[in-house]
Amino acid sequence: MILPLFRRSARSDTISSLYGTIVAQARSPSFYRDYAVADTINGRFDLLVLHLGLVIGWLEEAGFRELGQGLFDRFCEDMDHNLREMGVGDLSVPKEMQRIGEAFYGRTRAYRTALASQDPGALTDAVARNIYENASVSRASASRLAAYMREAVRDLQSQPPAGLRAGQLRLPDPVAIPFVEDKSSGLED
Image (cartoon, rainbow, N blue to C red):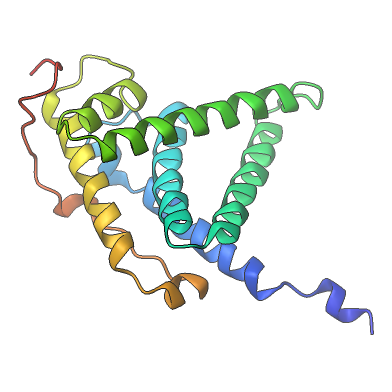
């Protein structure tokens, strides 16, 4: 029978659910209001990459590389669709997608390196460079976002793998993360 060919697979539903949770979290108004992230296309992209990178990194560590790849593929489909919606021409889309891929991998590598670093200010510095583009942002905003990222990693590590395979993902409430002053960073107060 041909009908099974048109059904969505459980894996597809799982990826859609996980990706939807990531996008919803990245669009949380508190990041733009309380964390001073620019509410622009670039600011929204940076928060999406931040969350996606954290989740994919954890999935790889937990042995769910295929699920992480599915999430990345879904991200690429979403970015392709958004570029076309914004009026980017068919001939320019591949070049823009290459730039998006490079941005994703560069930022994800910077965050992973900083999270693994013994230097407590490394993550704050990486956030300041990538999210705030070294703009005149307070150290508290970059430090708070770095603290949120650390909490998100702890939350991810505490979630049961069966839940993730079922499309259940929990990320911390950004409002609940207190301001933390990071004295080790070179950022201005």
